[in-house]
Amino acid sequence: MPADKHRMRKSILLLTLLALAGCDQLGIESPATTKARVEADGKAIGGACRHAGRAIEDCYTLNKKADKAAIYAGWREMQEYMAENKLEPVVPVIPPEPPKPPKAAKAAASKPAADGEGDAEASPAPKH
Picture 1: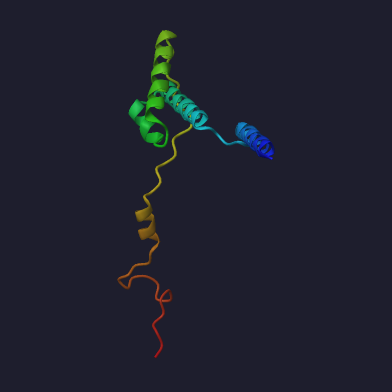
Picture 2: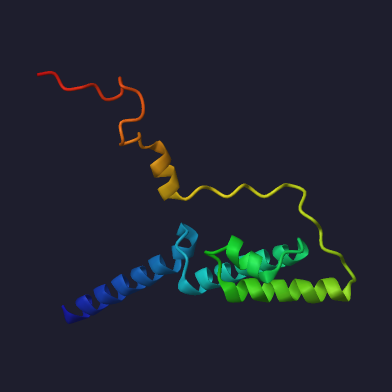
């Protein structure tokens, strides 16, 4: 019987390893894959910013969630490429989106005036 238990444990271990090996096919990223993707995204953002003639600080501001080291690496690589090939920046044709108002200002603008100004029907007087 101990041989059966040993064989059973080996089978369970083998099945577990096979299941874990297929995690990438299920869309579950390993930490190494995630790190590589984040770095590649940051480099792409940095390269695009430089190609569009944006300063590195502007690029950081516009892409707060991206990895700054990767953005810088992409920006620097594009700078070297553009200098080597004597390329000029491409000015963006689509205008940037206007900045959104802060949430606090939005909430204050949607609240009715508390000092009695405003529509009398909006807050009827209580009946006695």
